[in-house]
Amino acid sequence: MPTYIFDPDTVHDCAMASLGKPKPAMFDAFADAMEVHYPGVLDRSQPWLYSIAGGAMIQMKLYYASIFEYIMIWGTPIGSEGHSGRHRVGFWDTVIDGEMWYFAEGEFEKRIYKPGDRVYVGPGQACGMNFTNGVWAVEYERGPLPTSLPFGLADELLSTLDFQTATQTVSLYADLVSRHFGRTLGQAPVIGPAVKVATGLTSRAARWVTDRMVAPATLREMPKDNPRGW
Image (tube, rainbow, N blue to C red):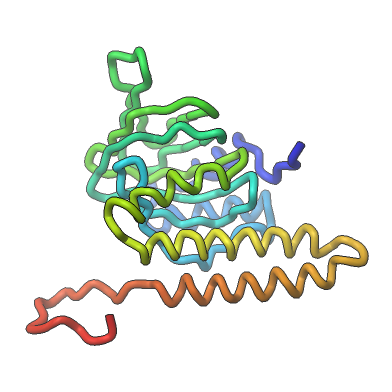
């Protein structure tokens, strides 16, 4: 039985610290609140990535990931819709800005979630989702996370052909999981020092890949030709 670091109610309470603040200050407010309860656990330095899964396109910022848990903020400023996926894990979400609609099999009216509202989609469940004109939410996942990776990568690899985002997703996850094992198994007697070295090397290599895959900044002025370098 895995030992979990995070409590869903505590994560929700920390998400509530974001309400009413502008972006991106609301994201920092969440991370600050989490730092009080879980000091030194979150990695605030990871970049924002696209996530294209189940037909929905959002962007996400992962703060923590292991084999059995993750913490992220996700959202879109323009809306999207799609299928939640049917997973072996559970998802606890707190809306911190905007609005989203959900429905499940046998439901004939949409469920409307606004800032401060919580959503739970459990193992074996699936929902249709609509992110209206835009939404931002804190998400906590608990369960065997690697079983959900195919869902998270399929659209990027087979539909949008966004291999860059797929590579970043895997490298960022490898980075955070390595950090987790470095903090936990790195404290073990005998094997601890070797684990710290191995996970440190893996983490640095994965972060190099993530950073290397960051796309060029959006051009605000119309170019006369394609920029060099990509």
